Image 1 (cartoon, rainbow, N blue to C red):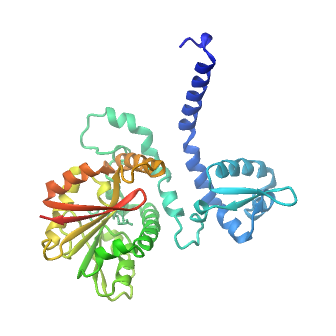
Image 2: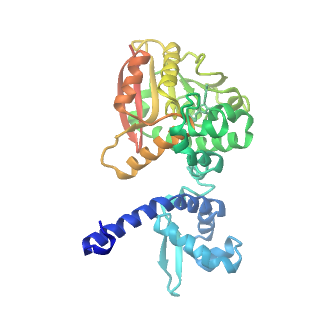
Amino acid sequence: MEPNHCSNKQTKELLDAVGFIWNHSLSFLNSMALKCAIQLGISDAIKKHGKPMTLVELTNSLSIHPNKASSLHQMMRLLVHNNFYTTQILPTGEEAYDLTLNSELLLKDHPLTHAPLALIGITPQLTEPSHHFASWFQSHDQSCESSFHVAQGMHLYKGMPSDTKLNDLFNLAMASDSRLISSLLLTNNKFKALIQGIESIVDVGGGTGTMVKAIAEAFPEVNCILFDQPHVVNNLQLNEIRNLTYVAGDMFKSIPQANVVLLKWILHNWSDENCIKILEKCKEAIPSREKGGKLLIIDMVVGIPINNENHSRSQFLADIQMSYLFGGKERTEQQWKFLFDKAGFCDYNILPILGSRSVIEVFPA
Ligand SMILES: C[S@@+](CC[C@H](N)C(=O)[O-])C[C@H]1O[C@@H](n2cnc3c(N)ncnc32)[C@H](O)[C@@H]1O
């Protein structure tokens, strides 16, 4: 296309393409605006105010210098455009900001707050390796399974025990997701039917135990085990839940025996080769299908649900995040089936009940 000889249609297409490239180049600022909103506590300030808040009120409440009010206005304009806040015009003619469900989930004291999960993905330590995708692709060194491994010299989970700050942030983030997911699943009859009647369940890589504690409380007759690495489990305060025990260990070596193994957000962290090893250890930990043995996997099945742009985008982005942080991936049904076959599991059901994620029930041969 000759720049000097563009038809109106070509001009429009060219400008659209330039805008498209700009948007992708600058879209990291959507993430940074979200981070800023959480760190400033914008949602908390609006909630505390109890009604829509003008820019002046917001500036005062956040103790921001009045000289920066116009910068805050710019930030709010992007956050409103991105559906974190809405605006309305007050009878005084002033514009005022209000919460949406998206920003309510950023409230620090919301029982289902997602602020810690939103922050962990954009922690500089975890975003920095994403600058090195290309050099990782071009490297022939097979010992580094991810860009994170190249940048930090080890798998993310190997470094976590000595990095207390990152470990704490990570565990808080996982707990915030587990609070939301457990509250959704434990009010879902299809999921509850998967647990009803079992004797025992082990939550492998269960983090600080939010998910398994919720199961233990909802099903007092089920013996529940939280299983994770020593630096995660050993620091936990033993609680009063009678049917819950904690076990520290390494899932690549041995997993505590139980009827059911729960793997929430575990397998997407690992390569196929490592997933097969983990699944083989899970198989050793459970009885046969006739005796109630099964796995419950909570992870994405790429392509399910179909025709949902929001969830598809989450799946593509999470897939790349898993790849550069861990050498892992989000898997299609075919890719899951491949792992199950290799590890000696013969049947599975997918329950697409968690938006971009599913619950997969998997049975041993
Ligand atoms: C992405 S987090 C998921 C935590 C939790 N299942 C959840 O969804 O909130 C992965 C968990 O796997 C644990 N993990 C990693 N390697 C492990 C190993 N070798 N043995 C046991 N747990 C491990 C981590 O400590 C971490 O808690």
